[in-house]
Length: 243
Image (cartoon, rainbow, N blue to C red; front, side, top):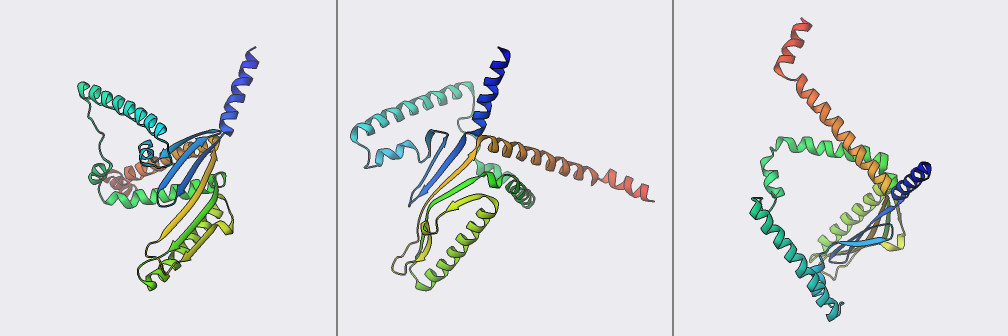
């Protein structure tokens, strides 16, 4: 009996680890992001409130959606009132305020650490990330013909380098007929239409998370040890030992 239960638990865990996570990015003037795991799908962006302004929904569906949003807003208002009575802050600290408190000297160090993390993690887990480019169409345009030509060259080079990097570090698939960059000298504004699907298994994502934490802990320990060695007391002791 115990072995049967253990076998079922292990089987369920393996099944969850093998489940794929999907993220679909769609842009045609407005960004839409959908995510899901296995057969489950849900929308991340935009909010459901934007559907009230859409002409594709019927009046009945709009009323139903409006009722759900009103209930959600009422729950949020009750939660804010409850937090206010408990003495909690109504809104968390803004990211811009926290960034202003940081010293400019640490930005370069943080960026270098981030790039180092990305390079190591991309080499280890990049091929486990599957990218399917269903559509990528960019039309370069501006009010000036010369600017349009320069913009077309820059966008073409950026797309070529981006696809080459994705092909090197990830598992990317696309059809040449679905990826195009062209110039329109009659238009005045650049247009972008894209639909990209990202897919990775739960096990690979957990491995990516644990590796990120391990690298962060190791780099933090290395930095703290370096700062400890560069303290004045240690520097004087090293000079004394060398003499």
